[in-house]
Length: 183
Image (tube, rainbow, N blue to C red; front, side, top):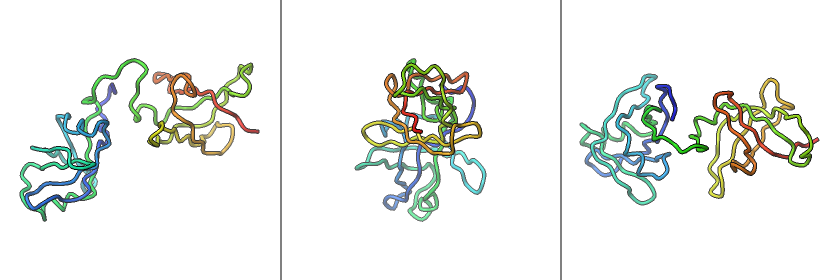
């Protein structure tokens, strides 16, 4: 579990729903319903964090709908369109050993041992994890070149722990992969 009081974006309000102050929410949680398990929520509005309370919510189709406390008409609800919803990182549930939140992986240095040359003892710095992509089959690390990386290329590397991803050290800020280094 993240140890600082950093806020993480857990969803986005995509529009209003109905005429009684409900909003549509695109949740980034898995499963979607976990969006409603947080105790505290904030919105980023005009450069500042504003607390918000959802007093009701449920799954609706492929997304979620929620009612914002004190908002009881469509026009007011529509004013929240496009705003990100955040929650404190400290409110995230504990993970099992070897599991990580995406936010913990972002920014890690990616070191590679060439999968084509298993005898090589030197690891090469590919860059840093910029962000992750959910593809359906498996998540993908987007690795951006950094100052000391072996080249200026951006790489897409499957996030497959135990296969491609051979180690994660949050304390050291590193992620090790077994991947193919091109000439």
